[in-house]
Image (cartoon, rainbow, N blue to C red):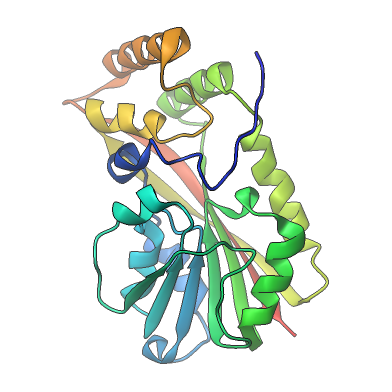
Length: 250
């Protein structure tokens, strides 16, 4: 199967509605880790890079004094709901337009592997104050669970590019950045309860799974069979581990 790459800022333009319905949230413990040691969160300024429709940005804005959601995709921004202390900016992780040393925390949820790391990492370092913090968060399938493992098999069978491998490579690149004083890692259990529609939306929101044509039809047929096999009382549960990588600036 051909593994073609497209402009990462446009990958999700036709998938925004599925993104809203099908993407999981993040466990409270993972958000706690982002703010640990900072004191009063309402005094903090935060930027969320590759914010999508704002799933992660809203979690940050619930605690921080100001959160700036950076998202270059117009369809994703248009799908976001207004939220207190949350501002949206049409910009990229590589060029946020934010002032030097203006932020306490910069995050990328499920997004860093789409960035040009050679440009994004210096930009993150530029906008963070000394002693600030950068963080990567990823929900990764925990395939010790039978349903989650079966879903993972479908993903690998129908994937149109190497996006999942890119995530691991991106984390290594982030860890190797010379601007960090200290790097820490933690992982927290997470789960997503899905009915039939939200399971289909979860797959539909994934940019490297087929959406149309014969492959898209076959994937939906296999998803329907998977749901019928594992559903209990109209729901299945995707089990995940939320990985959190934290880096402190010099």
